[in-house]
Image 1: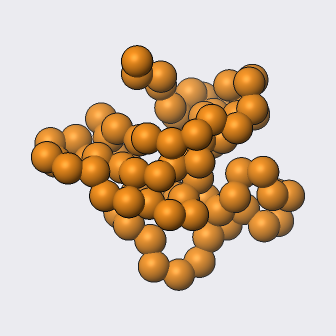
Image 2: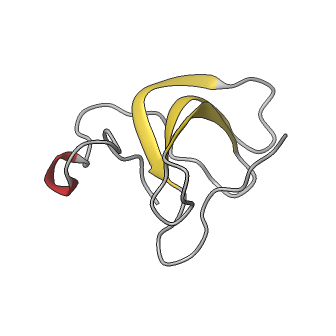
Image 3: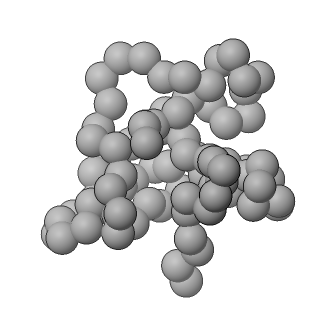
Length: 78
């Protein structure tokens, strides 16, 4: 799994380039804004990522994650 670019952009423009924080591993907590209301097509505009076991979150400007990629990737935590 890897960070994506703008989830609202056309498919050809979703890949990111340049320096990115470590991608989220199982158990990571992502904070951000949901774009879309259907989990099969929704994206999370991630503003911070706290890796499992880490004490603090790190900023993730310009990083996006799809909720689904042939199976659910992101789970809501309230």
